[in-house]
Image (tube, rainbow, N blue to C red; front, side, top):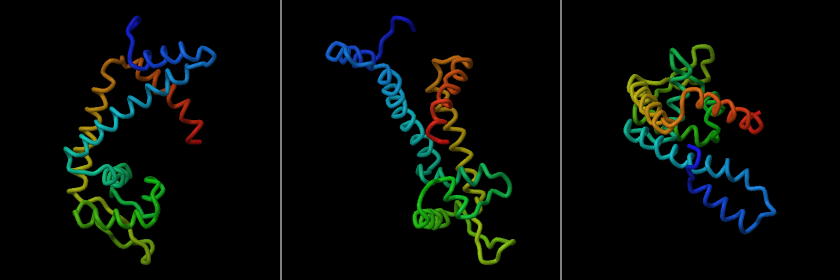
Length: 165
């Protein structure tokens, strides 16, 4: 890869000529992250579309699927995992119930509460979507070896801990 240049190299080179007083190393990293994010967004949307899911539906269904058997969470737990408002979550659950991808059930431990449960159709869709997603993301990373992926994941984790913590 030495000697190869990309659009970010050209942009940084032009800026360096115009503003040699600035350190453009942050742009060298984060402009690439931004560009890669756009490719990732397109790949994810396509994986979800092929599974007949909207990205917001994926967020809810994947949270339920990751919960493991019996694939159910309270609306509050879903809120915590998807970071949307209570009203938005209620609307999303209503729409998913309408599509028969989830169902509401009484919480056996608290009759006043409900649990949202993934239906068989919902599980089929989310499983298809995750398979397509992993395949699409593997293609995006095809230029990297396993060791490069692990090194990059570690560096990105280190960076993201400053924001997620």
